[in-house]
Amino acid sequence: MGKLLSSPKLLAIAIGVVAALLISVAGGALGASFGFGWFGGPIPFISLPAERVAYIGSYPLLNTTVMFWFGGLILIFLAWRATRKMSDVPSGLQNLFEVIYEFFGNTVDGVAGGKAKAGRRFLALVSTIFLVVVIINWVGILPGVGSVGRIETIEEWVHHHLPKVEAKVQEKHPEYTPVQTEAAALVHLLEDHGEDTFVAFDGSIVPLGRGEQARVPLNKIITFSESGLHQIEEAIHDGDDLDGLPLLDSIHSDIKKGVVQGEFVYKGQDFKGKTVGLLVPFLRGASTDINTTLAIALVAMFTVQVWGVRALGVRGYGGKFFVNPISQGPIATFVGILEGFGELTRTLSFTFRLFGNMFAGEVLLIAMAFLLPLIGIIPFMGLELFVGLIQGYIFAMLTLVFGVMAVASHGDHDTHAGDH
Amino acid sequence: MEALGITLQQLLTQLVSFLILFFLLYKLAYTPIVGMLDSRAKKIKESLEMAEVARLEAVSSAERVESEIASARQEGQKIISDAREAASKLREQEQSRARAEVESMLDRATSEIAREKDSAIEEVRKEFAGLAVTAAERIVERSLDAKSHSSLIDAVLKEGLNERKN
Image (spheres, one colour):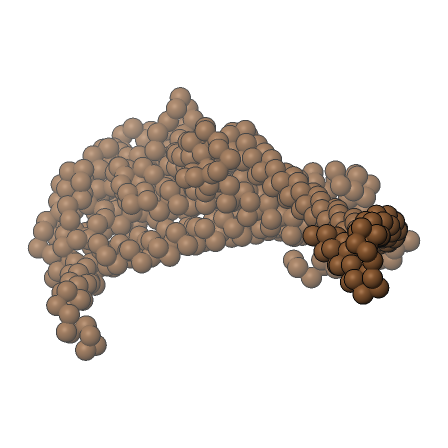
């Protein structure tokens, strides 16, 4: 401490850090409660499924897919640069790739055991999984990913949600006409999501200082009443002509307008007439999409089965799961069935381990950007880099371990039974 | 499934994307890098083996050199001792020869001396005879008395001896 005070440079840095921390606390969500909160950004709508950002024909392009391709392109570019001019004395990128492949080369041989290069068959997939998972994890936490996006208007929101409800209505009342089905679905939607809140935007950009911006509930955007909804329901039930209902028309036009209708004053600012919607990020880390993690997990587990069959033959490998209860005893049969379920649960645990970690990381970063804007996020970004690396390593190592277990024949299988 | 966002369409998209990525990485990174690592490992192994061979060769050649040196030394020693032996033999021979020569020279000298002595004695005798004759002549010339007789002989002898001395 004495040293800190005696050096003016250190002291200045310490004061600067404390000041930045205070400013970021005051500027964030905590400060907002006391009338500060200058730096708060909009909270993106946190949704488990990935969001659609564009359509290619009728194919919906997800923001996670974009990031997957982006990460893949980076990886391919790096690999191309690394191997374009190979030299016996490696340097730069070639060195980096050599270190990674050599590390995994030694690891697979070590885990597979036995003679030299025993693990070579696992190397390609294990190292690729590591590289891909790490790169998609890392590009997923680049600044701007998950926080830069467009506004999903109320109309689009309804458009996304309506088909599901319509399908449910149709199941219940197959006799409804399409118009009736749509109206009924709309009623259900409003009833279920009337309290959902949306962000009121100032134009298309949320200005700084509205971090805790007004969350406007749906019933302030679309004017409706319980009794009005009941009227519509009755009209549908009775088979009346729906075109004449004024409430339904006004709901439709409100959805189209997508602005704050009712009185909504927040911190002295009247939000009436402002556009509302949800912030849909253009980009989102590919590993926060369960499709990605499931795809990689499926490839990994499928390849594990291929390794097993190639090493032991169909009979030998199948014999791990289908055990004759008469010759081997019923317990062995039961264990074999469990073993088969194990393959399925491994796929699921692969999927959810990566997805859960990375999704939680993304939510953590969003929360920290909200609580401590500017600097609060920095240590957590470091943490997420580390988590991304570790998750890639875990994915690769588990693939390797499962592969080694799959190729182990019955006799020495028991020695591995503990490491599930 | 719906709530989690799993759709067949997206799952297939990611699956195909991953497989393409795997294929490209296999071609671009895995094959060249692992090939490079393997070839380098092989190269290192080979050079180590070569170094081992060279080391063994060096050791064996050093041994050979050593043994050669030893044998050369032995040979040298043998040559030296042979030479020494030959020298001593030679010396002995020379010595004995020299001795023999000296002896023969001595013999020769002795016999020469003897001969010289004999001849000298002969000469002396001849001289004496002459002198005696001379002395006898003188004596006869002078009416010889006994006294002058003998002094005359003495003088002749003295004369002869002096002549001989010179």
